Length: 53
Image (tube, rainbow, N blue to C red):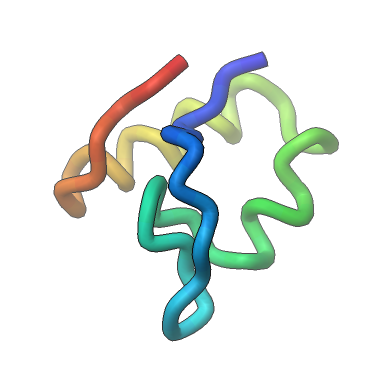
């Protein structure tokens, strides 16, 4: 499964400080299709978060 998780799992202001996903995105992650995950991961790259797979 595609994931931007870098195992720094701590939320501040409703987002994970490690991967940048919102808490809502994290909660829905397993139910998302790969294309939806890719779109979120692309946004995270633009926002400056690292990429992991």
